[in-house]
Length: 91
Image 1 (cartoon, rainbow, N blue to C red):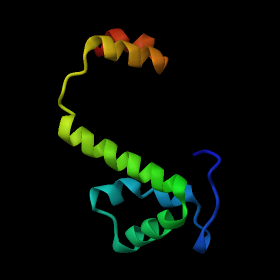
Image 2: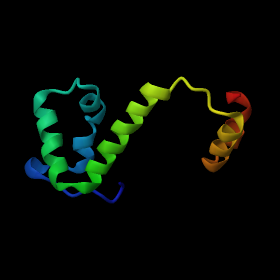
Image 3: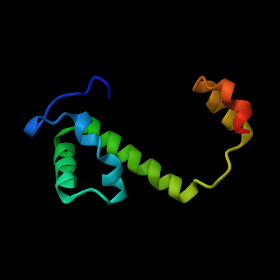
Image 4: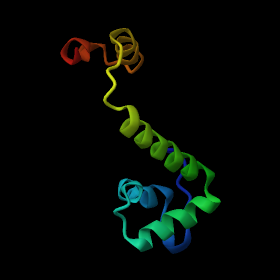
């Protein structure tokens, strides 16, 4: 979303609006921020995708987050993320 920086009413950019995303998803954001994010998402598909993806990720984590990742899958993930140096410390 680096290049997605158009501005909206009041001069806010997508990045500025999404800074409050954690509070919004946790239900702890002020009503004005919730309204602003929801209004923004009506016309901004990129931000809607970000919000929906993060919300689903949080939901899945709460449902399945305590499941142990198989060691083989963990190794593939660390290699894919170029974090091979950290594999031995996370095992």
